[in-house]
Image (cartoon, rainbow, N blue to C red):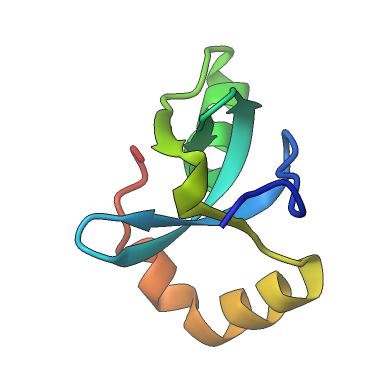
Length: 90
């Protein structure tokens, strides 16, 4: 979870804990004091292509963990079909 030792930055890829204990991979759009605002990569790309702001949602900073790039590449290659089933609006 994000804390003083782990700084989540805008643009970084994170894992968020959603209800009920579901883990989602998202991209950080904004970091506030107690909240991290995230969106899916699919929504970010669609918004960029369409020239609009991406739809996003905030999560408590305590429910956000940054993913190292090497771990992300391995995870996405192994679980790509599972990521497609996630709700792209979150």
